[in-house]
Image (tube, rainbow, N blue to C red; front, side, top):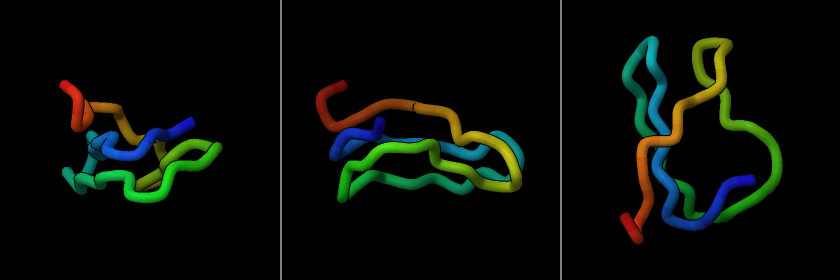
Length: 42
């Protein structure tokens, strides 16, 4: 589950996303799960 302010990155293309509306599920880019890299409180 994502949390507001979480930041995720794609290890393949380098896209970075910041969650503004949390939800369930997995963030996917380039056919693979995105990697959690931090959040607002870190």
